[in-house]
Length: 453
Image 1: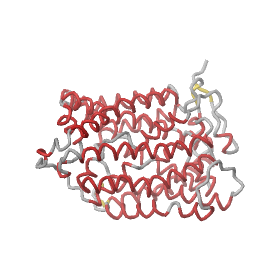
Image 2 (image 1 turned 135 degrees about the horizontal axis):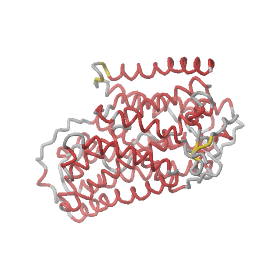
Image 3 (image 1 turned 30 degrees about the vertical axis):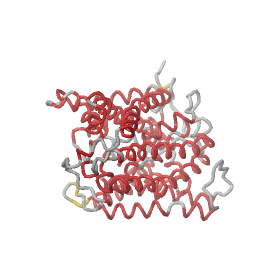
Image 4 (image 1 turned 120 degrees about the vertical axis):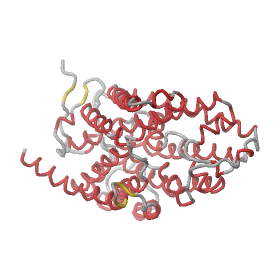
């Protein structure tokens, strides 16, 4: 018996949202999967404290989700409840503005993934080396990174429920060290004042702190691509998005607020400081637990994002934008196996390129795709008012238009503030613009090949 079968392209989004014989995600697993697609835990907040101080960091970490994440979550809640289709944001943009813009939405996400997904196996190795320096010799780290990619691909091929359960366990394990750090900070007020003069390599200022916070709160729309595999998506998505925003914000704010009690100077913070703080507060055992949590965070984020990105080629194949073979599903778990394999291979090949976190590139490409989603929200409110919506962005048609204003203003500010980055010898903003425009040419080639075949 064949391991896979083909899935005929549906004629509308309601057909594409169904997955016969496939298990469905419920509310809590969707919240945790979204948590990993966006955050992966408290790791990565250190430079916000360095750049803004404790009070400023808490303010930034509270305001950013209100001005940046909440509008996005409201937009996703409405569109996912109105069009609960596999492929999520790609389908929304295509239905609102046509095939060309739908293709651009998918192009932007997949191109961004090439630069983004190679980071997480590299982070996994970086934390592993802290515990076992042996892996830093020769090509051992690259082999471990490749093993992470393969393991996550296999988990995804095993089905969405396996990915969800892995995410729940990883969430519990990586959160435990931060619960301990928070508790110890309350029982040891002023306990780290002597570490105030510790030098760091961080040069992040208040603008940089905002950019880091925005990056830590990016990616909510990634959860939309699996809408066809979510139980009662019209009801589940709005609640899950709001709960995930609260969960991520809570996980960022509470440990930082607790650390302010220890009197550790903000200038002592830099990327990776949580491991040192854990050692100072709880000794070597807590430090090891936190480093291990960093490995789980990197693994969990990669694993959840494989789930998200792999549904894009599947949905595009259903629409005839990619070869039909990408729409083939495994017979038992109903997973788009070729999408998982091809994307995992591409990400594994990028591991050796040593991409650094490119804030300009990330924010520009992600911001352009997010802009298309907010436009789709407004367009569908005006052109398809009869579309059943279990959840609506408040404020009527103008509310659907205005909800995207704050996120777009923040995006413009962040791109302007980080334009000094250079990629391949050119300005990061220019490099990102070239990648965006390249999607127009790729669409032309894709349409020509499709017509010829």
